[in-house]
Length: 510
Image (cartoon, rainbow, N blue to C red; front, side):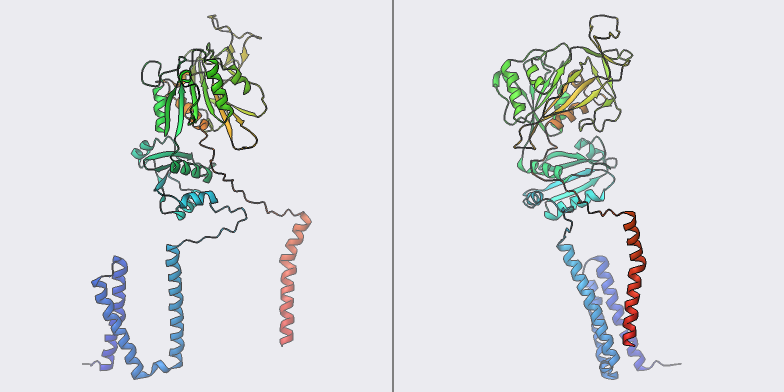
């Protein structure tokens, strides 16, 4: 029987060193804990490997060999490179450093945003109710999170977590909310064409930090709808505003005499009697200094706001909008066409409807921009009827107006030239019935109301002066001859000069 030589036995024992060392490293890395178990393998393995090095050095003098020294140098260099890379990765995971080399700082947050986020004293969280995570949006949110550990964000699938989506009041994918201390604000709705905006996000963040509430006042005292549940009430509309983080209160101008300073929006819903002159003047003064008013005025009513409306180029038509072939009667207007405006931009051809509505006409006024919101069908499917007492419905040339008719309009006016970002806003709709309890939740009626109040509150306007970032156009326009010359020089002339220089250099050294 062949015996194993003692020298061979020592070599076999030394193989335990790498085995024990590898076993200890694997146990520690997999478990994530470097306790007694991995140390029982690591320590003996290291001792055996060191002993092998000492024994090899004494018996074979391999340490003094040139090949050993060269191999050792290579090994040490490799270990040093790996150590440096590991250190860089460790520091990179702990500390973030980015340099934006674009001229317009396209990938950097504005100084106002940086200052705001770095001074966060309370945790804030952004919730994006969308399955798709757009890289551009995520990079923007990561930029925010790098500035403070108090800023966090989360993408949420509204279908996978429907309960949470209902708690937020999510109506469509892409809604982005900012919340802090149980306060929640809608930032915007993101989609393929409208990406997450730093301006809007910083605006909401500033509002949450400062504790500014968006205040909507409902004018009372002229036959307007009551705000609490009951007959002829708009309690559902009031509750929907509260759910959107608005603070709502009734306003009696006859008693108070002036618009409160904290008013973001004044809503006049279905006033049946005329306002006093001082009330109308108070509302007009409020608009002149940058206020926002929502007027819903039914046919056969006159709230005596003509001076205010004339200043904006708005005229309430006394005729009645009709749809002769309407399924629910000629006075019920079904609207499926909307103007190009933030209030109605996502409506498509969906339905909103208005029972007894008056058309609204506009005339150009310097400094006022107007956009139609609610459009009826073209004639002969709709027109403005002047004879509202006759049972026979027919179009009378010269007295009636052919459709399409405008039942709602949104207007803006710059307050003064010294504050270019300051503007007042006005929305006028020739019907108020659509916002009453029962009808408010039908089709898009509630969306028309909520979107109008949200736009009027100017939540899309930034309180901070953050300019949109635009990439500079650095394109070079070449003529056909210049393009051909560039191709020839890059493909033929420059390579030929390179080869020629190399050939001359070789000839000189030869």
